[in-house]
Amino acid sequence: MSLFGAMTTAITGLNAQARALGHVSDNVANSQTVGFKRTDTNFVSYLTESSQQVHRPGSVVARPDYTNAIAGPIAQSDNPLSMAISGQGFFSVALPTGSNNGQVTFDERQFYTRAGDFQLDDNGYFVNGAGYALQGWAVDASGTSDRTQIQPVRISDLVFNPIATSAIDFSANLPAGSTEVQTTPIDVYDSLGALQSMTMTWTPGATPNTWTLDISAPNGGGSLGTIDVLFGQAASPAVADGTIGGFANGTGTFAGVGAAVGDPAAITFAADFGQGPQTMTLNLGAIGEARGLTQYAEQEYTVRNREQNGVPLGAYSSVAVRENGDIAINYDNGQSRVIARIPITTFNNPDALQRLDGQAFMRTVESGEARASDPASNGAGRLATSSVEGSNVDIASEFSKLIVAQRAYTANTKIVTATDEMLQDTINMRR
Image 1 (tube, rainbow, N blue to C red):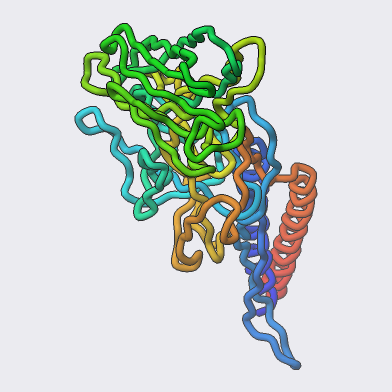
Image 2: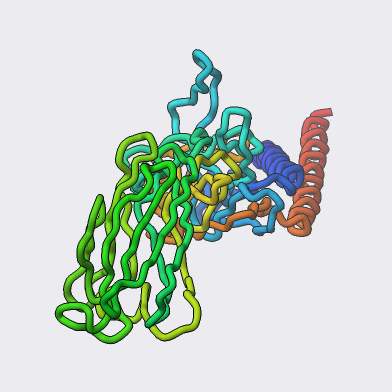
């Protein structure tokens, strides 16, 4: 009977509008949740019978319509570790499950999220507000990332080992025709990171356009040797006046490098600061070119550049996230080290991902395979640092949906009431 069908259909309408109201409630409640994706409502009708002669009341079902692929607004954050994805993709994250012998254990399943409000926890992991740990590709000392596996990113390299000085760049002008001895102090680092003092002494030679270099190190054995530096016409073959043409008469550990015009002009030597011989190269420019060390007419000895590549022991200072996905540790000795790179994971159908607590998702058969790529490549979005993605909920739109759901629900109750009265009238016909 159509009256019973009408009542049944109206009741399914009540259930459908109740579900739609639940979606609106969930959206409004999470309007300020970082990385939250709203749920819209898709109403689907089911038929009992429908033809050109008759149509019987069917039913309606409210199904969730997910918006995982719709981005929320990106806002700047005071937290330098927060990240947002401008475009498609998700962060790969892991769920901590406890600890074993002091080591944090993680759920073996892979999770994904857009909630990038990451901060360091007490174990050095990047953890967002929902407790998920950021995952990335590990980077070795050479700067090569291991893309065969993804793992939680952890800040554990809190010390930067010292690097002994191996190269010294020196630029200066020795006054042509001068008879005065010129000296220059140079500080280098030994293999233990200690600063060691050395002195370069330039002595004019008896032959014009020739200077003798002596390097002494008080803690490295005194004088390390001497070598003659030949300029312009003193070299064989001769080069442009005022430029280095070659080296001669090296003693001790000194040896000259460079023969043809354009070759690097350098001197190699070694010093023992207590840890064995430490070989260093003094770079003086190029053979026959007016750069690095020169000899031109000036009243005074002029040093233009004096640098070395050694590094002392460094302690952890801060951590930085770069737009290309690199996570780098900064040390108080001015050095930095990249320890991981953050990939962006994309899916063919992100709206089919399974939703979980804490704005997280899991891959499903319908979503397709997870593809990890560098930021801004292969369809993945760009990484925005010091930023967070807000909820994609529009309060004004949700209030409109609320009003529509409320009115539709009320209308369905009217149908139930009217049908009930008509059924009662039908029953009373027999009296």
